[in-house]
Figure 1: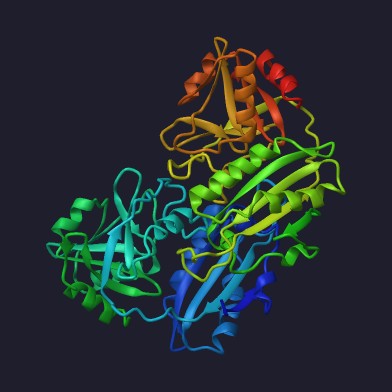
Figure 2 (figure 1 turned 45 degrees about the vertical axis):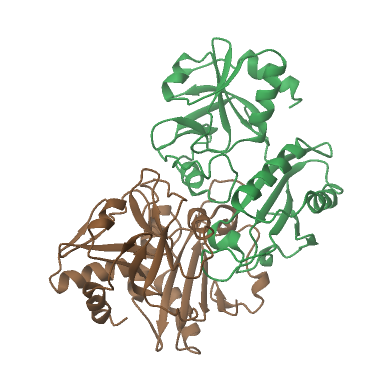
Length: 271
Length: 271
């Protein structure tokens, strides 16, 4: 909670009184966010995060604050810290009561720096199935928007600290993602991940993994995945911009080794 | 934007600095809201609003602030005003970064009073179809939660002031609701509305309408509705706690009279 914080470029020290009651991020989840890793003074894959944010603003019709302003904010925050988690929120801005977005409203831009998460004991993840399902809506699929009740309710399902992630199906039973990451499986040498055409977040790390795998000659496929696909997998891993690439080693009765593809990708991406 | 405002029971005069950066209502839309009509010093159907809010808190596992605290807040706000729109937001409260809800967190309660909307010229509504679809998730269906991007994007679809509402289908083509209200149709003397089993908000006015119709002997059915059902309707109307019961008189080439069932319900409910 001790993040350094800028709201619309202004340093905010009173975090408890930072946001307007009329901000549409609060009233309707009308906005987007990014979570990036700051390591050794460098925000990893920053341009990919900013590209996704820009794309989301365009899809939702939210005024983009401009990369110059965002980069200025980020520069101010990372001056004092070498490592941490950078979070950017862009909401549609202030509005009167009612769903209709006001015309020509300036978006709200929030840039905050949080401490790194406490290091996990294990890099390797034991995961579970979530009973919460993801709803399908191609209009919202892929974006990291602020409507995240499904992920919140999914993470409420367990408090066993030995469980590192939960895998999520959509309402039709497709395997889409983890609660806070994308899922990859290796099957007969091919790297597969959900195509996210109906739901899920198009992760920045997911794109890096696909690119890096292609670069060293591993075939990749984005296509619908189903729970059964896990049974044929020689290797499973979860990706996320902050936590990197994490091998999945157990899911109920299924077990996998921490495999060579994940290991090679971690090296290639310097994670 | 000149609402009177209480946050956790405290009068807030600086609306621009009311909410914490860590409030999960902002970060994940992790909360619920209610919008009620204040008329002649009375909040209409207040107990129904509070019941729905309590039910939503239970379903999402959000700490309910207690009806006593809510009623206290409301009492303070309505002392000075006789008419307006009362808005209540309850979020899960403050949290660290990450979807997982903190244990035993106190919810945030926001109670605000807004001016009545500018009176519409016409009580009768001409409506349109929205191209934005509602996603299906029984786990979230019926609740007035803060994840409202679909409604926001739907209302962005038109700016023709002669259009009073937009009708929304879900991703499978069912007719679910209007962007900010429930839809009723009269067919052969029976009053029908969507059963909302997959999506949509279980409106407070919707429940009042069903109750009142039953009381004066009109048969009611909650069942799946489809666009074709509009063609067989003798009467169509939209309900909402603030705007009451509004006859729908036109949708593209379809037309209906402002019919007797809507009129009778308005009288019965003193709208």
